[in-house]
Structures are given as structure tokens and as C-alpha cells.
Length: 102
Image 1 (cartoon, rainbow, N blue to C red):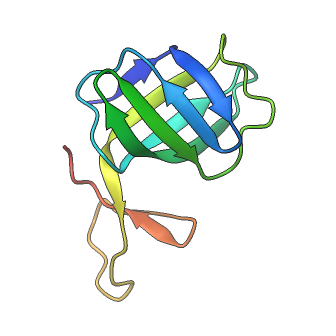
Image 2 (image 1 turned 120 degrees about the horizontal axis):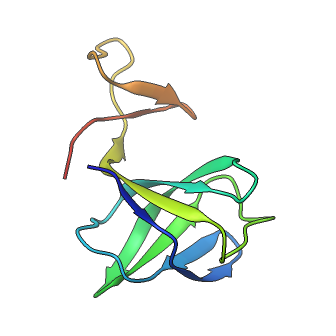
């Protein structure tokens, strides 16, 4: 189940802190939608109570804490054997997003 938040509290380089989260797990994949509609991806590096530290893969230049939407996708990134792909894996950035809902 997708969880969407508009509660970014800080940005420092490729790191984004999202507040007031629930049911988010370590290494969960994240999409951040900028105010202009552009989507960039990242993953959860750390969780502390109701906060998540997210590392962005594509940078944070132009990200506005007031207008950005953060979606936690409910699965983690995992390297898989390219010769043994299963239906439902998504190919991107040389990795495959493995649908393991957490």
C-alpha cells in the first residue's frame, strides 16, 4: 500500500528527512514528486520513531519542502539474477525493484 506524505522537515545534500511517518521500513523505496511534477527516487536509510531519513538517488536540487510529496512504495530494492527474471520486476538504474511488500 502506498503511503504519501507532505511532511519533509529538512534537506541536506542527497538526504531528506520526512516527519510524521507510520509503517515505513528500512531500505523501502521512495518516490519524491517535486512541485513541477518531476519524480525522483530514493530509499530509506534510517527510521527513528516517526521520522525517516531518505537518500535520494537523483539529487535534491529544486526540491521545495512545502510542495513536495513523498511516497513510500512498500517494497525494497534487491539485486536479482538478470537471467532469471520473474514477472512483476521493474528494470531501472541497473537494478530491479523486487515486489516484496513489507
